View 1 (cartoon, rainbow, N blue to C red):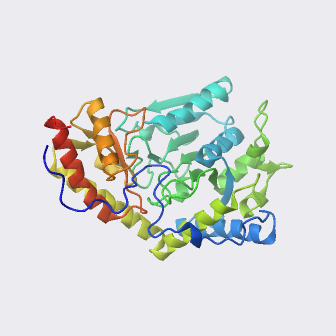
View 2: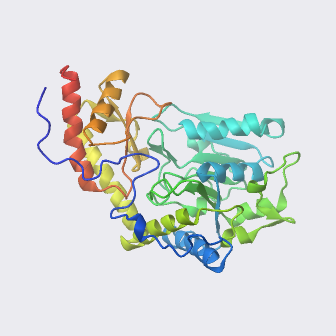
View 3: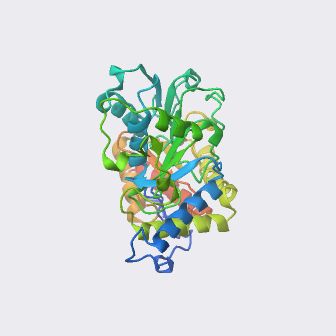
Length: 382
């Protein structure tokens, strides 16, 4: 077996795509503990929840007339909440190219039974590719993921496939895109994400971002024969419940998780806000791009560089599926890279998180170990 690389291992081998690595220098003991044991409805509880919302809007550059709320059940809960509240008034175009987008399509037709009331059009592509996004009808509601976490394929920057003159709503699952990519808010009516993606926050809570058009839909349309669970209810007496978007959450949040999210937001500000986060993520991607260019046994799952994710970087190897499992296991046992196996529904591959909480130096230390592991497996030494 060839000698292992003599250079140091990554200082932090956490490259999981979700939950994602904590920010550099993270220390749980440094979190603000004033809300510990306090009600989320207390003055300090409401203050901290509202602060998390305000900082979110500021860092992401969300327009002032958009609403941002903290809701239950991670990104999944936020997206389901939106689907249950607004879909059914117009025909629907659903674009998916990986497992989570496919799940939204399944929920729309199998659980909400939307094909009983409207036309639901499905546009799909294999892992590594995008469907024809130009087929988005401006008079339809359009559902899509901004970045396919399990495929490493994102929509083109700017979302030009969305019409500025649209009459339908756009619903965007942006959980592995927000805080790492520039979001064209003028194109997005309903956007969701979760704290454990990109910023490495804790799970359980989701974020819901609504444009004025989305608010108008909520206040003018009530789906027939669709009872809404309490944790999905966004309106009261025909009007959006604005308290939700000022920090009065629908159910009890973990205030410890809130403080953890605030810590990540304040770190984001300290490195230059969104521009700093995007720059770090793109620099991380560049490390892997250089490595792939120099080695013909490894390739991006994303076929088009213009749609290549800078967060959930998915890579195929010149190895069998079993050999890829061995590749992943070796790097784990060597404490070089944890949790980099490709998603179970994706083609045999690996997935390396390159969001801003990951350090470029750790990726530089990772790649020679990847080469050594590959060469050892191919030589039959492992």
